[in-house]
Image 1 (cartoon, rainbow, N blue to C red):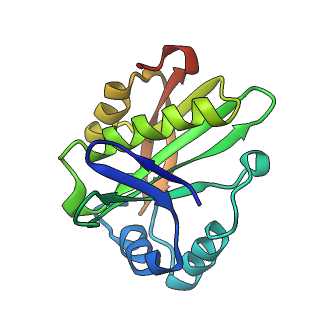
Image 2 (tube, rainbow, N blue to C red; image 1 turned 90 degrees about the horizontal axis):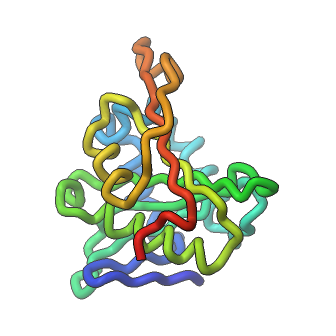
Length: 178
């Protein structure tokens, strides 16, 4: 079981007890407005059950960590990564915070901890972050951690009959702030 700590947060492996929080975050239309159309409960249950399995770096599966506030154990959200290209050492990162956890620096703090852990634990050359071009809050999170905008994929995702442009960010392992 993986546990990471920051000054304010505990990041831990996903537990079966996290199901209701996972379901809520994955189905909330506001949280998902720049990510995807929410999946139905049965599809989300399958995703959740799959993510409970032990994580293997080069499997192509997401490592999903639950973010909690230290002391209160208040649920904040989820963060994670997956190996996008093993041979190149490319890892994609992601995060989804509950509405109550947004706007307090938790995404930045948890992402920085995840990146530090990954640099020490697995062979990462480059981290990749993708967010909707309109999602300025998510872009700020990536930039605060040191990611640089590398380009925009126009009309990359379609959500509710609306095309979304995605901003592609990159962070080389050697550039991460220590």
